[in-house]
Image (cartoon, rainbow, N blue to C red; front, side, top):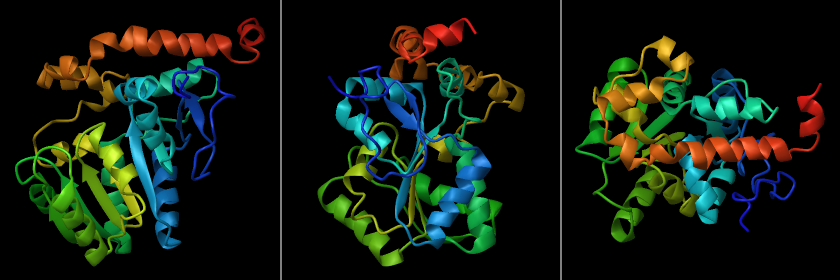
Length: 276
């Protein structure tokens, strides 16, 4: 049985990179850091010339990881596996091992770019779509005039393979960015980063999915009160109802909520804690 499908925490291997304490949610291990702490930790790794990568995990990622051990490994091997969605924060509380807050891709992207502009860290952008990387670079430059963008590339649709893969790895080797933003959509982006992690010559690689869309006006963020109450997903659905079916959210209850409850019941001392 794969680690991600077994609800026992003790059976799970330690992360390959050994970085930081983790909170187990159905076999996917997230780091219990706030947004500000995550930015500080990533910057520390950049200053120390370490190569690290971050992923931003929501319910969809967890469900995919439970049915696909190799994808589970791509998430757990990350140096910064962050709880992107409020449901993961709620799940950590049910499991009595709470993370302080969500660290969602769009918020981290904004905060890290601000730090990069202040400290002079260089940035490279790769994301799929109609000139999306180039449009994102322009948006970043308008938002942070001092940010140092060393390149932007929009790959052809689909997996990055063959000559395209060699091209982007060559671009990263040539420009040596401090921060490499990758937005290819899950699970493609996490798999690509994991597969090429030894060859990506960037200090930090962040797989941030559709976070770029908010910067170029393709999507609007939910109002803050909705974000804080875990309603941002439903705001996104109101803008694009097809997401409900594309990401199979109709299965969230029996593939995420019920398994989290089962994991909570199986934790050592769960029965005693429930009566304390």
